[in-house]
Structures are given as structure tokens and as C-alpha cells.
View 1 (tube, protein in one colour):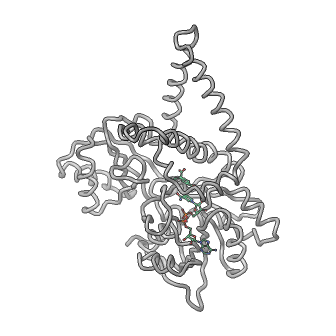
View 2 (cartoon, helix red, strand yellow; view 1 turned 30 degrees about the vertical axis):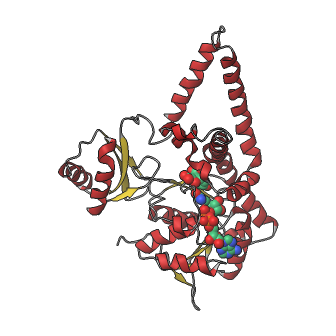
View 3 (cartoon, protein in one colour; view 1 turned 45 degrees about the horizontal axis):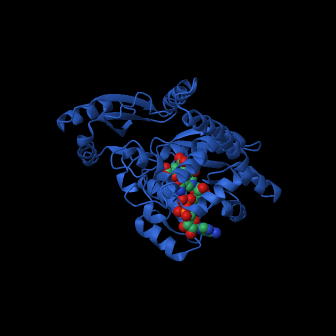
Length: 369
Ligand SMILES: NC(=O)c1ccc[n+]([C@@H]2O[C@H](COP(=O)([O-])OP(=O)(O)OC[C@H]3O[C@@H](n4cnc5c(N)ncnc54)[C@H](O)[C@@H]3O)[C@@H](O)[C@H]2O)c1
Ligand SMILES: O=C(O)C(=O)C[C@]1(C(=O)O)C=C[C@@H](O)C=C1
């Protein structure tokens, strides 16, 4: 068991996908985790999974994490601020500006509230989908406001680092504008694309190869959750969608007469800009479609990377490519190991059996995230 940076008890309110995953990860580090849920059955399930324990008299959490639907987040944050006057309260909701505004408007003690948002999740909610490793190697946005202190920022940073994430600071509004582009519009585009599959013969979707699967996975997400997210971030999302619609109109116009002067150039420019855009996603530049990438957590200690490479060799797997990512401020890094797809599953199992922690991210073999 590794030592946690976080000290003291951590209380998690909401034991669905996020709350249970955070609880599992913190319990692995030996943190005393108190769980709460309005549904007794959901609470029992998360406790049974080992994500924490029930609240007890005398509990005194240093940190409260609210992990409920966006619409209920401000209510629960306000209630937890009242119930735990010695605690810092954070939340993990996918939108940040409207929650801070709501808390401020109702006169909550926002001096002890610091919002955050792990850029990690799955298209399925609930404790049954929870996994301790969904945060490994992912950004964790911390959204300080005018009353936030450096000590409070360090506490949420410690939470992010304990879970293997990379903390990133943005104001609540900067966060909301950024996630409109990198998370909220992708959800809409995936949903619209997947919806095109409706109505026709079932033989057509049956032809799906990896391209459609890659671009529509998140279309399986919970509509109720996403109604709340999109409603709370409507203006930044609309701005990105308008630009997207202009681009789409340009493609349609070019394809209406693909041989017309200028049309081939417009199509080529659209595809090339896509190449350039995807290369800007960290961990995606230089990615080679022929290989699967395993993301392995490597302690920042002498000889650790060499040991990993030696053990990959001992498993008889040829490493096709290697990239290293360092988590700022963390005593860990991430080695992205590219291998042929046939070897990826076997190598992942072998490395886990040898005690290595693998991120189950979008690029990892067997990933569902
Ligand atoms: N799903 C993702 O991929 C993802 C990723 C990052 C952040 N988030 C954010 O995390 C939050 C939780 O999402 P999730 O996917 O874990 O949802 P979820 O539906 O899996 O879990 C929410 C849990 O909160 C409980 N709950 C609701 N109201 C409650 C109350 N009043 N008191 C106590 N418990 C209550 C529910 O019973 C449920 O167990 C959301 O705000 C979401 O925007 C989600
Ligand atoms: O990968 C998924 O399935 C997600 O749900 C991830 C994702 C994202 O868009 O990156 C979705 C919404 C959350 O607010 C954060 C993470």
C-alpha cells in the first residue's frame, strides 16, 4: 500500500461511478473514507465493493467530495459546508461556473468550497461501473475563485495526485469554455452520429468497424446526466457548435459538387486540419494506428523505468514505441508503451500480475473508458 498525500478522513457524498471510484482509489492508499448516499442500497453496494465505510458519530472529515448529478451538486455542497464547518468541500461535477454562482447567490460559505473536475469517467454511471484506476494519467481540473487559499488548492492537488491524475488550474469560466470543446460538443457529435444509425436495416450497423466504434462510444452515456451538463453550459457549447455547423456546411457544399473548382482543396483542407487537431491531443501525437498503447504508472525512482523495460522483454514482447509523461509535482510518471495489438492484452495482464499499475484510458487495451 502506498502512502497517501491526503491526511485525515475523506467523506464522499454520492456513491455512483465517480464517488465509488474515488473511494476505491483512496482506500487502496489506506485513507479513511466515509461514504454517504441518499439511496441505502447504493450506499451498501459501494461499501461492499470496499470504497469506504458508513458515517459514524464523531467523524470529522478534513475533505468532503460531493459526487452527485450536476443539478443536485450546489444543494449538497451547501448542506455539507453547514454540516462540516472544519472541512474543505469540493465537487466533481462536469460544469463549474453555475455551481459557484448558485452557492454564492444562496450565501453559502464559499470560502471553504473549491470546485474540481476529473477529466475521467465512463459512459456508464453507478457504483457497478466504478474502478479505482479511471483517474490514472488524466487531467484533474481545479477551479480556484477569489476566496480560495493556496492551502486549499494544495489539498485538492493532493487528492488528484493520490488518484494518479495531473492537477490543472483554471478559473470556473475558463474550465466551462474548455470542456465545451473537449467534452460537451464531442458528446453531442457522438450522439448525433450514432442516431443516424436508427431507422434503417440492422444489417448496416452490423458492418461497423473500429472507426464507428471509436467515434460513438460515448453516445451510450446517460441522457439525464448530459441534459443537466449541456443545460448548465449552454452558451459555450452553442458557440462551439455554431463553428462546427459552419465547417459542416462547408463540407456539404464541397461534396454537392466534388469536382467543382475549389471543392477538392476544401475537402483536403478539412481532412488535414483534422490531422493537425488530433495531433494536439496529448498522448495522441505520433500515435500509430498499427499499435495498441499501454499506459503504465512508473514511480519516479532510480531504476524503475529500466525494470519495466526489462520485464516487458522477459514477457517476450517487442516494444514498438515508448513515450514518457511526467505528472507535474508528482513522484510518478507514465510510460506509454506501443505494442502490436495481439500482444497488448497478454502484456497488460502480465504487467499487472507483476504489480505494475496500468491506466485503463482510451488508448489502453481492454479499456472501456
Ligand atoms: N460519468 C462521468 O464520466 C463523469 C466524469 C467526471 C465527472 N462527472 C460528474 O460526477 C458527478 C457524478 O457523476 P456519476 O457518473 O458518478 O453519477 P452516478 O449517477 O453514477 O452517481 C451519482 C450518485 O449520487 C447519488 N445521489 C444523488 N443525489 C444524492 C443526494 N441528494 N445525496 C446523496 N447521494 C445522492 C445517486 O444515488 C448516485 O449513487 C456528476 O456531477 C458528473 O457531472 C461524471
Ligand atoms: O470517457 C468517458 O466515457 C467520459 O465520460 C469522460 C468525460 C469526457 O468527456 O472526457 C465525460 C464527462 C466528464 O465530465 C468527464 C469526462
